[in-house]
Image (cartoon, rainbow, N blue to C red; front, side, top):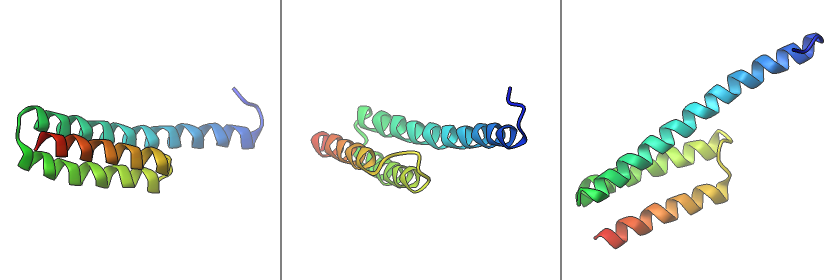
Length: 87
């Protein structure tokens, strides 16, 4: 545990930011799981809706600095490819 006041503050902010980043990542993973479930259920209509919301969550992750833009583009491309193969 740090003794210096500024270091104590940094620990607090780091914990807060870590929790916020975890929330964003968890929401993204949940969205991707829902997309995969829709594809497994052969429900392409629902999968298209999930694609839109998953893409939106991925973009939010980039905007908040949780994901790198290339990672986000790779994920978006992969889920779009899965949907096109399922059609």
